[in-house]
Image (tube, rainbow, N blue to C red; front, side):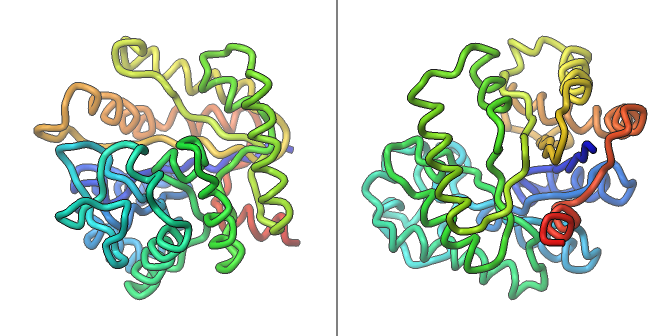
Amino acid sequence: MRYLILNADDCGYCPEETRAVFDLMANGLITSTSLLCVAEDSKSAVKKAAVTKAPCGIHLAVTADSTQHRWKPLSAAGTFSDEKGLFVSGDRRILLASRKEIRAELEAQYTWITEHGCRPDHADVHSTALYGLAGRRFYLDVFDFCAAHNLPFRFPRRLHFLQEQLGGKDIPAAIRLLAAGVRREAEARHLLLPDDLSTNPWNVERIGSLENLRRYYLHELEICGEGVTEMFLHPAYPAEGRGPEWRKRVWEREILESGCLIEKAKKLDIQLISWGEFAQMRRG
């Protein structure tokens, strides 16, 4: 049996993203979202999530998304923040952080979202640093955090997702070993992991058009394997000052709005579920 979690990431990133996510949720065009607690529209987003009881996860972040749009940690400023107490862009600064500081920030974000009336049904991450790609094994702190709060986590059991991120090329032995090690650490903590993930890794120039992006996601559904796959997109309305890459988010909203992914999944007999339903299914 094949199952699909259709997730909208970055809820709370800005008003244009928040509005897109909850419009899609209200129309049954996504099954889940992930709330970015430190972002500029997070307060509006968490209020909507609490009122609507939307299936919502926590989108953990410990770095800024860009030099123009900075976010403030919810814990005490640490070595991963600058002299203004803000996250910095990129993963390099995060190498200075202690694991205690990272865990404190994760807990602060969890406290914030739950105190605002939203109980997350899973966790995923906004920063590649938390996957260990910056050279520090902060994923161990993420896994301990998830185990403490009984949260499923976004990491694939299969290697298809990693191969897609590499443009379909063979996965280097070092990355295979890293992925296997990460999975072992998650399984040692009895975390629930999906079987696979899917998202488009390309920039606007490589995508070329809305139709090309639509074909990509429809093809991903066609090759969807057995078990549970999470497909995550970043839907948004047009926003001033966000640069040319924002167009991809607008295209992803238009693809979801069209209902083509829901329709395709049904034709392929892929059952749509939320993260909460995934957890109930796996825990029996």
